[in-house]
Amino acid sequence: MDKKMKAWVIRKERYGVPEDAMRMEEVRLRELHDDEILVRNIAAGVNHNGIWASAGYPKDVVEVQKQYGNDVDFMIAGSESAGIVEKVGKNVTDFKAGDEVICYSAQYNADEEADDPRTGRSFRVWGYENNWGAFAEYSIVQQTQCFPKPEYLSWEEAGCTVAAGSTVYSMLTHWSENRIKEGDTVLIWGGTGAVGISAIILVRLLGGIPVAVVSDEEKMKLCMELGAAGCINRKNYPDIAPVSPEMLRSSEYDKWLYNAMKMRRDIWKVSGKRQDPAIVIEHPGESTMALSLFLCAKKGMVVTCGATTGYAGTFDLRHLWMHLKRIQGSHVCCGYEVQEYLKIMEKNNKKMPIERVYAFEETAKAHMDLMNGKSASGRLVVRISDNQS
Image 1 (cartoon, rainbow, N blue to C red):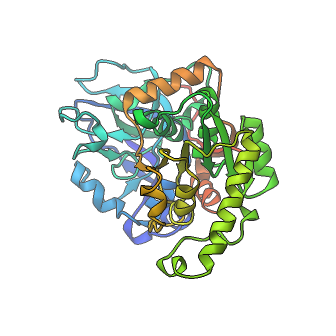
Image 2: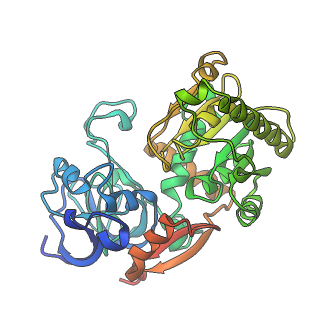
């Protein structure tokens, strides 16, 4: 394709923090495949995988993308966006030039036979494992990634609603035995992060009781405005640390259990019910998994979509098997779940709250702000261009 564009480019020799790894460059777009769409990006949400891509860890994103046909020495991050279709491949039937779309992150070979595309060998995350992501003037996406942009959403709202929102929808609804039910208490770690905000909104819409875990009063205020039944300040439990084999054999575990039971009682108070969480929305990982498993109800589910504090998970297995609990992994979502998520949000006129909109030239800064925890009252979004052709 004889087309150049400006993009925030990550290269191997610059791996590190986003302000070092991401640079604005002019690059040439490759040719579209038959099932692909060229989208002119208007706005894109800032997510943690842009930070991980910049670091080149846990995946070397420049090398990983080559197995999917991108023989270039750079990566363009960004796994959700809203924009306007510029051009379509010859096999694209659902969209045409000029259509306004939302793009989400799941890519896979459509001819694969899999009940769930996420289990297929070709499954990859656009803008992290595969190139031509959202932080560029144009993106190359698959037809299956695109959904019509709801008219009630601004471009910025549309650009940051799907990555976390549809992921959380899948976490709450995908597994039939532990699908959220009316009146269920749901514990939500990181209530003001992208996952937490989405979870508070969706748990309320689906009839549950959202209880958010945060670290300060300002974040509590936002959670309550979003619809949380109450909040837990994690700083009130100083002896809650990751469980280690050594801890289990010492008096430190008695302190750990004391604080864990204190948190359990506090959850009952703020939820208004003497019931443990039927679902725990996990993503911190290393620092919280043991506690999440302890707090979860009997036959309940700890469902995790990430590990922002570390990948090692150590916990007391007795809390798992003796109380028939479930630890469930969840990654992105299926296409039909994006549709269901967008439908329930539009029906209830719900939107993702936005804390700050950055100019395209501030893309690296936006990722630095997310990495440094400066997002306290909503999503961070990059405005890439206007919506004029």
